Length: 121
Length: 106
Image (cartoon, rainbow over all chains, first blue to last red; front, top):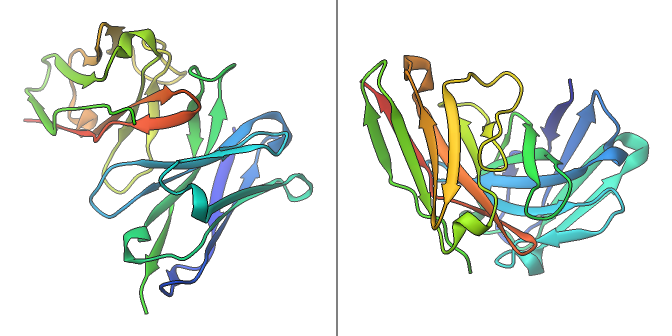
């Protein structure tokens, strides 16, 4: 059974960069695609982006200029960086595994427990 | 941008059938996916590619998708099904989530 675990600072100052890492166990990170999704307190889910096992990425257009997702196969981890954060970026950040065979049919079948990141001075 | 619309809330009595809808432009031409999120927990995939149940999801969960509406149906609803439900689809290469529906079992 694959397991995902987010880690990183729980508090980030405005204008700084949010950094989170997702550690994957129970399977090789090289065999699937991976994604980040966030949920502001009391609100719905927002997709941030995903990374293919080749290293190529795609991001939510609303966050595109501030987001970077990267892969470290040697550590079986992938990471999220979100720059120039504001209070609006306060959310629970989830990492998830992407399964399926092609665009349009891909889905998130395993999720991490989530990491609350608060943006505040 | 592509939008998915869900009713904010649905109520159902125990043992009855709950239907949660998700509407989007020509959604029936795409696959719909559904996630359940109980309070304080991470989302769980309960339906993929319109009507396929992942391993471990009870048979009382079923899904359909036609025209502009996808529907998640829970037959014989139980108290443990009380949760937020989110639909999801793809718009080209990007992911779209619906706003979520709070299912209350009372």
